[in-house]
Amino acid sequence: MFAALRATCSRTARPLGPSALASTLIRSRTSSSTILASVPRRSFHVSSPASATLNQAVRRRPPKKKKRPTSPLLENNPQKKGVVSQVFIAKPKKPNSAKRKVARVKLTTGKTVQAYIMGEGHNLQEHSVVLVRGGRAQDLPGVRYKVVRGTLDFGGVVGRTTARSKYGAKKPKS
Image (tube, rainbow, N blue to C red):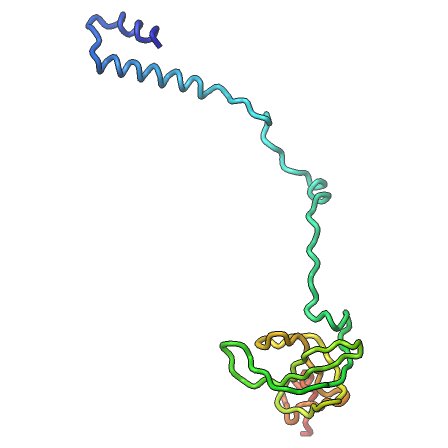
C-alpha cells in the first residue's frame, strides 16, 4: 500500500494534499481487495454436483403413499348386504338446508354403517334387508355409503323417468 503511495508521489511534482492522499489510499485498497476476491475460495466440492442418472432416479424413487379406501367397511367388495336397524332424518352441513333420509344398517360382517337413501320417497323400515354400496353423501358428514334402490326389500323410485338405473325404476309403459 505504501509502495503505491510512493509511486504516485514520485510521479507528481506537487505535494499531496489530504484529499489526494485519501483518494490514492482508497484506490490502492480497492485494487488489492479485487485481487483477493478473484482468488477462488476453497470449498468441499471442487465441481458442481451432477444430476442423478435415470437408473439412480428409479432406484431411489420415494415410496408411493397408500391410498386410503373411501368405503373401508365394504372390505373391497362392490356391495354388502345388511339389515336396517334405524331410519332417521339428518340435516346437511352449511350452506345447504334440507331433510336428508339416512338409514343405520348392520352389515353381514357385523359392522354398522350409516347409508344415505337416495331419491324421493322410500319404503324402508326397521328389519328391512338392503344392499349397501360405496359413495358418500356430499353434505352429510360421516355418511360414506348409499343404499342400492330396487334390490331386496328396497323398492325403486316411483314415477322416475330419467337416470332410472340409479334409482331402480322400471321402464314406463308407453
